[in-house]
Length: 424
Image (cartoon, rainbow, N blue to C red; front, side, top):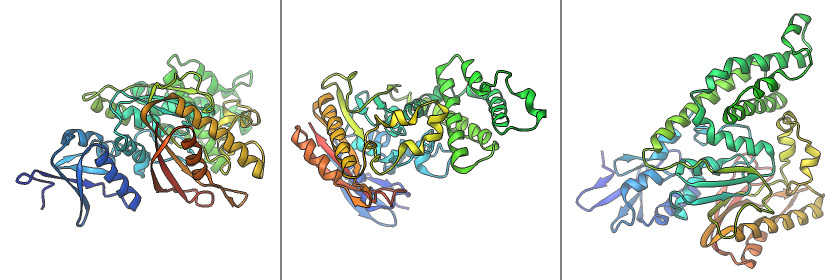
């Protein structure tokens, strides 16, 4: 068996993860290495490897800690390979708490981590995602040791992002509330289903939600958020798929197991570097008032495809569970207002305001990475990518790279995405 290093020539072999299957992923893998200062040559065998040749501007140990697309560097398994193995789900993209909540149109964790390396962010630097969405950038920033700031206009996204990052901190306490959570939810479900009188004694006399009372008695906000998210996932599943009550209990078990996985990961990572909890808040990407000028080291984000994908409709069960007025919230969501050409025009205007804010808060000489695709609206193809490049360059950004990426699960709306690397 061939070794992943050659002592005589001092060449180190970095081997791709065996789940890598697309050309664009290989392109990102190579850019990870070159972004970190490695001198690389592709080597095709039964697996794809890259030969790393001296002089080395980064140590092997550092590559082992940082790389996303590789399962090993030399004879050492990468940190990311170990993290992905901490998984209660079948997909590598759902490891740790990444799977929490069925969010449409989210990008892959591996992509985010690889971008950290391509633009060579340093531990402790501040990363912004003004379109938080499912919280992928938030969790990846946390695991990487970055100080994260995230905003979203949807309270569902804010809650999801917070729980994904903080669940590990309270993993040991979560099982203590499980029995009461299940009992409370069961009472609410039976009440709402108007079951027979033998269940009447399980329901509060005032007719209020027993589960909300349960949440109100929890002192730790992180635990409250965790069990509230479990409630929203159940509401979403029940609304979309008519799932029975047993799904709630099973889901809590999986969520707690993933929180324990996150706690295990935190223990491993904290031996090497500080982990920043960061800040996740409700906010509008068009007006980042709480973020100072030139205070952010990097921006990694993917604007919503709301001109083509109705996020409010997809999240309606969760939003209703939170008591949110969906019509009122929709008025402030980018890409929802108007119809046809008017809708696209308003979307462009809103995105220009968001891009201007990104430029304002980013430090000079640093990079903003935007993952964006060209959606279809009423059967017509938009020019989202072209418009983004044109406007961003007009306000002072310099386009460094425009890389293709395949998107999954939205083929009727968006087939391909571009990853745009801008420098201020």
